[in-house]
Length: 207
Image (cartoon, rainbow, N blue to C red; front, side, top):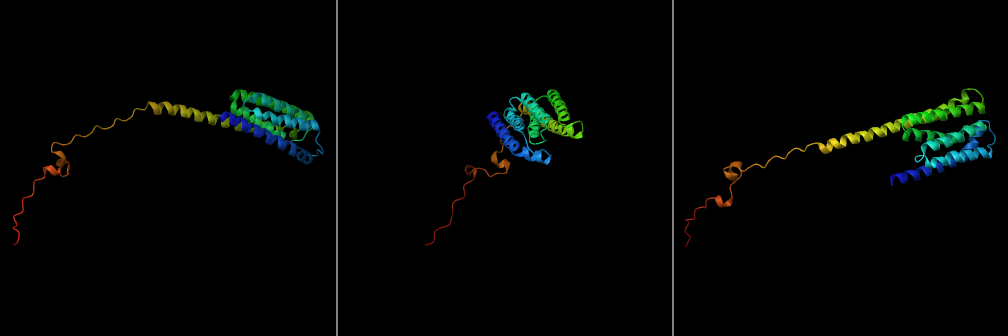
């Protein structure tokens, strides 16, 4: 049930990024001196966003798809915009769900392709390198931190489980036997059967 809910959330996330990409790419372009966005750029935005619908099921292929889409987008002179959010979430997913070695290699390969695309599209300069590094290194660090914390919690539960089950229970104290003197020796009055009967009244009735 939790897995199905996770897939549904990924689908909603993909739709949200798709909407944001379709709405926000043109304003991002105008802010960067790009007056119009061609149709093929919007197609790449759509591909990068919709790929995240299966990000937990196929984290590595999703990172590959989004990386290729962003590289082609940058090679065509597309502005930095919402499409980079799709790339960041793909990098985060790989770092959070795959071992550190695999995640680092995949993120490093994606970063290399992005730098080459940025240099070819914008020319050699800091503006062509810095955004790609930030959009890959940041999500990678966050994803690794989340995965390590999750694994630590699971390990702590495994360590506490057997110890709590195997811990011997303290034996209950044996019942205390009544003292030889009966309940009076405990400070309580004896039963009514042990009380001495009161002497009969000798008062004669008045005439």
